[in-house]
Image (cartoon, rainbow, N blue to C red; front, side, top):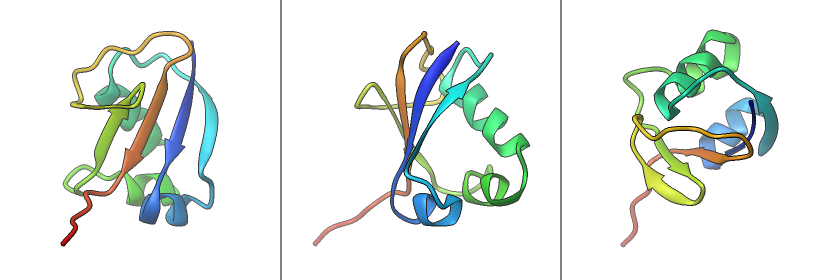
Length: 83
């Protein structure tokens, strides 16, 4: 299936892109993250397990169990704080 992936803040800077169209066999956000990590290089570093990475699925904050479908939008971003 094809999905749209967006990257924000330090993740966007590390990957050198803000978005991409991605063909995936992943059925969940967690599986998609693992597929991207498996690309190696900057993807492995920016999205590594153990790093604090937030995810949104169709513009709603989601956990790794969220199911993916054709045409979905997924966003990866670091946690942010404000004051």
